[in-house]
Amino acid sequence: EKSLYTRQAERIHQGGPIRRAFQAMFTTSQLGICAEKVGMGPRKRSEQSKFKDDLIQFYDAATVRPNKPKVIMSVHDTATGHEFSKQHITAAHLFPYKLGPDVLVSLFGENVEGELMTARNGLLLQSGVESALDDGAIAIVPDLPDDPTTEQVVIWERDEPKNYRWCVIDNEAESLETVVALKSQGASQDMTIRDLDGRRLSFKNDNRPRARYLYFLFVVAQLKMAWRHEYRTDPAKKLKPQLGKGFWATRGRYLNRALLVALAEEIGHDTSFPENMPPRPGTDDASKDEEDAAETGLVVIAKIIAAQKRGDEEEDEEEEE
Image 1 (cartoon, helix red, strand yellow):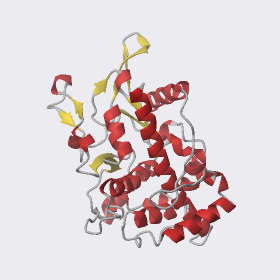
Image 2 (cartoon, rainbow, N blue to C red):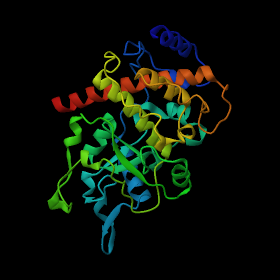
Image 3 (cartoon, rainbow, N blue to C red):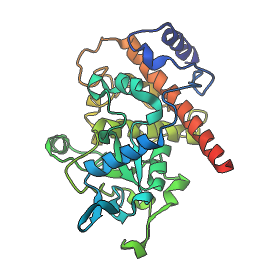
Image 4 (cartoon, helix red, strand yellow):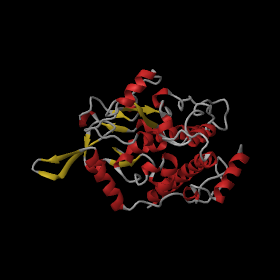
């Protein structure tokens, strides 16, 4: 298996149609390849501030002072549906900023170019919920049963606006015990991130993030849980096969098939479920750029490893300061 990844890594270095996404240097990781320098550098504070303002406007999330529309009194939290002061709400990226725009286009197609820092790639959340989402402890799925009927999926696909719900991925994650709403703040009782499981996301208008970015987070959450619990090194442990669950029945429209296959292989899932999916979102040509598509999946895994490692290091440095 490792030799397969090594050969593909060598082809990446030699270039190809999506070479710009693969310019990072690769070092040792759980796959035998990992990006030491990946994607984008740290965001400028002004860019992040604008991103937050764009999200507040896009989701109509602000409660303003009467007669003073520029004074924001509170912001609507998508996770809990409660109102919090603006400084207690985070502008959370769905597709990680650190992976950069080239990987974004490689995975999702040309029609999402330029969306990295737009409201379609973000949600307004408390920092604890954002951290749990980044860690893969929770994810966002269509507001459907775990195994919906075809008719239920068709109705969800047709309806606008679409509704989503929270789904706990890793029941053992410590972050699930983080309190996100207090009874004293208007909640019926103190609420933790674990209590979000099955709860519908709350929006004040009909705008929604792109479904494909939510699906990306769901898929990557499976990978992160596998690493966290070392399923790859302990065959006795078995991941619940959520990647093929019906609530993301239209997954082929959202994400590069190669990433799904590569991720499924990495966490020990059955890889047959995406066989009939197009290699890239919105295409039907199963033979188009298959080799480059396979490389895409492996590169993104490497980049996720490196980005997460770099993020942990940056957090450690901040704590030391």
